[in-house]
Image (cartoon, rainbow, N blue to C red; front, side, top):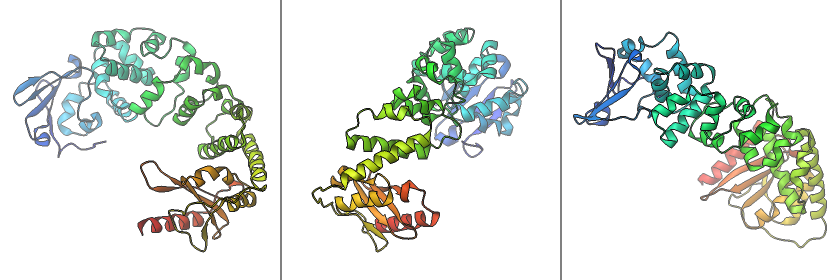
Length: 387
């Protein structure tokens, strides 16, 4: 976010406390915007190439509100704001992106809008983002602020359920931008409220996960979602469990996972499947050679070049690397055994658009490698790619 506009534009307040922003130097042609003071109702107009320009009421300006607050020339204009509001607007702009000027237009005209902003900024943001996306009439938007909150929520095409509205207040994102807006709009909040209302909060990763696996909403596993949830560990175990189940022909794996009450129980299920797949693969099977890996190995980082060695790696290290056989055989994945500084297994994957990246580095039983091991592997990989 821009913190100083002095090199970009000229900002000053006129004798009527209007804010004048001159973008001419920045843009290379005449462009001047005037924003009226609070008591007149915040609105803006512009002049470009000496011609007056109409600026839609709910559009955003090309300058962050926080940057204006840092300009000495804006002092008189900002002094027209109610006490304490400037700080709250800066905080709002930082967290709820793309709506601060639309918010200014509304709260300077409606006490209902001001009250909702102070009590439920997320609902205000959803209303303004929807208004911008659907190009609502400003009179309709101002009128909506006087409605019950459930009616506002429904107008945003989310739900009229009180439980759903209460649930969405538990959404905890670091910030709310267009991507988060799309995630929220795509979600079935009425349905989610039936099984998720007791959770302490919802984060972005949980919502995206449940969009892919909606059956998991009512699972014992998700019912125990808490702040200490380890997404990195969960994603690895969950992905590998699905992969192994597919290799083993297990069709009810999501149901089995849903019965796990925590990550420890999911880990136990994962480990049982790993044993099963390693035992299955260690039976007599034809020897299949793999393609040459894209990164040449060393004496300490040894590429696994056939399915027999892959099965032995999984059995020795007590993990599910053998379930990657099909991807390795088709040249989409490559596996190496690391001998030092620790005995570990490395996976390198083909990435979309070309090239390769490190996918995983794990000790026996999927243990976390030391910093020394991780740094040595990354250094080897980067040096090999550069060469």
